Image 1 (cartoon, one colour):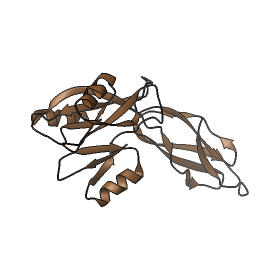
Image 2 (cartoon, one colour):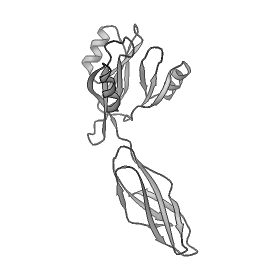
Image 3 (cartoon, helix red, strand yellow):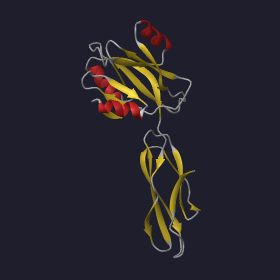
Length: 208
């Protein structure tokens, strides 16, 4: 989910659409980063609404909140994205409210640091609004760290930003090493393989 900021109104805007993101950037909005990762679908939609008077967007899982705002004149714009329902994969997205703002009155973030900072400035913490999903681990390119002629050392970097956990196996030319496991941030793994002068040096790494 892309997060953008309007320096004129103070509104943060969130979208899964690269076309919408890029269009707003051309209009002067500031692209801030990926705010969180949302599942492609789930049983928990997040609704998007627009206030044509204030020029402000609002996002909620609550049907009652959605319908109440529509009754007050907000435009319902459909499902913006979905909330993660697998409790083992959830990342909370916090909502805060600025009672002094007209536009940009709500902020949504996965960062407790940001949430607590806003509360210290007078924003009202409104709890968890929905859940993003943990990002899956990714494997970098396996490389040869050293080669004695009879043994090669294979190295690989694994990135697990949300500590999901994984098992990984390093290989060289079809020889599979023992599985390693990890679940913390960025980790580097090494394994040794017996080779001869004619053995192809073809390191690789896979989840196993």
